[in-house]
Amino acid sequence: MSQERLMKVLLAPLVSEKTARLADTSRQYAFKVLPDASKPEIRQAVEKLFEVKVTNVQVARVKGKAKRFGQTLGRRSDWKKAYVTLAEGQDIDFMGAE
Image (cartoon, rainbow, N blue to C red; front, top):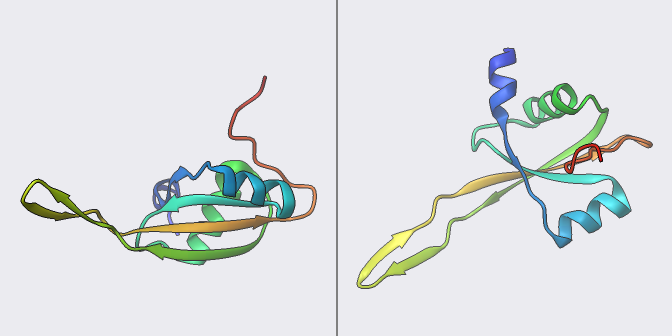
């Protein structure tokens, strides 16, 4: 896979109470990824960007909600998220160095 493609696979980290708990208990981190990203691409992108060892990748497709704007019906876009499990002793710090 090209380096350019790997840099575009991860769109954003998902930071919430649930993902913070997963990071603390089982070294799992969640990312919003491209809808056409594959597990090997996600693994390589995380390993390259954060210099960590990935042991497992799980993906989930999130269906967009139907929303209403006055009388107009709309729909949010579908998106994909990935739960990445890191090897023992590995960590990703999203807050940066203090």
